[in-house]
Image (cartoon, rainbow, N blue to C red; front, side, top):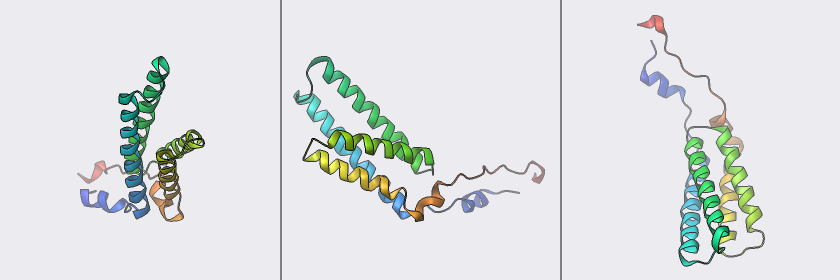
Length: 137
């Protein structure tokens, strides 16, 4: 009979590098969302339709990062690739910028790199689903 304790023990412990990466992505989100809100609220962004498009794209990116960070906590390899894509996208946007953009770039690159260290690979390995034994009842 498979018990809840058996299911808990079969799950590997989340590596510290994954936890640190998630914390960096959370910091990245807070700073990024706050800066987007400030830019939009103060009218410093693109005027008119371009500003609305930029805001919508920002919201889509922030939503993708929230989804991916939550999935990384559960061991999703796909989610860590989404975060790498977001870090690369952010890097492309930050090339001509300075200040906070460079800080966000450094944070996202560090957070993405942590997800590919050798010690975290087992966390992202595909695991077989645990199916309770129907005959054990």
